[in-house]
Image (tube, rainbow, N blue to C red):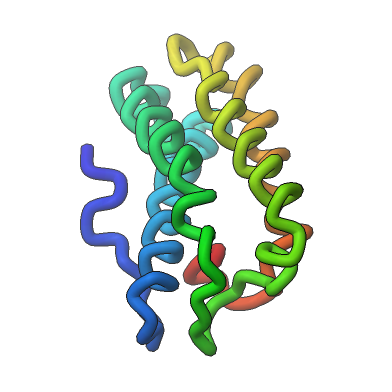
Length: 140
């Protein structure tokens, strides 16, 4: 299952570094959607698909600081300037997201339901602080 394959959301973004951030977040959103749909039983629990989504989230959350290291600009970016003004805090948020992704337990539906809220909370906390409200197509 290729969670990130073909999921680029360009929407007029001309800066390739900003596009790389968007692609990272789009891949995370797709993987998280798989897990939340399983947790809510809108999608049947499938251990292999859940593990693939977990693997995507582990890899992408680890890359957040690298993708945001420089304040590349694009009119369509939803990243607040606060990301770079509060870099230490931003990276702590990314570390928490990565720890939560690593803590996802996809062995059973019950395990997924117990471990998924920590990841959702870490994503939401970071977005509340560092993402401009905007279009649903992307998270950054």
